[in-house]
Length: 354
Image (cartoon, rainbow, N blue to C red):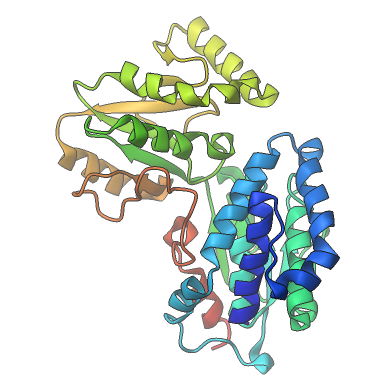
């Protein structure tokens, strides 16, 4: 199964760059799937305007990088009891979000690599891409055909559930699936901590952490912490390189709306034409907006983030004192072992078979 997943990664890498590879192992897959998948990628924005072609290819780049053979091996070595015996195989329902392309991919492969069966309920905002990826995986290893299923209806005859949604939907999930083993994920966001020594390249990289997928992902930076004397104009000037994002109708509508709200309510903010920033203690910000908070002592920031860890998916920083931080520009490229909400999905899945 590891070889099959790694081959899927090699296949998907082609679509990340939009160019076929001449590797012999991909010849059959390309004949069957390549042109159809390209058509899906190029037309997805018609069904969901947020899913632009560059964003889909970015997602494919991240997915293909995460399932290189060495990464899969490192990931699964933590779970020597895998895979589950086929007689103990369970059916795991997975309710997927639709905020960024193929956001449920990690849950799907986790269920499969744990030896269990996957029953997925896709978001109406992202109901074509992952189905196609599953088709390709079945073409690589036909064993998966009987272990992958998607449904548009209720999730029935399942032994466990993994559900990702908003804070509101999570309450419904918690109640509805209260009698099943479950992982229920809520809203989380990324934060960045600056010390004022960042180069223009560093700030551009943080811009990627802010703007990738138009800021809709749980790993996108929605708040920055800056030293007391930091010049925000430097930050905004560096991010002007992302000005073309404001040409996207839905993103620009969000910019205009939030700009109007701030003006009508006389809320101070800065604006570089593609991003609005305002001082605010909250972590989650609207699309097109990043909050900031000033600090005098880094220790206080670390203490605050520890208190708010249930709201934070990842921390972006080059500061050595910040443990488990991610380098600027890398927030959208998590390893297989970097679990959403910090919950070890594979431990949860392997426990089902015990």
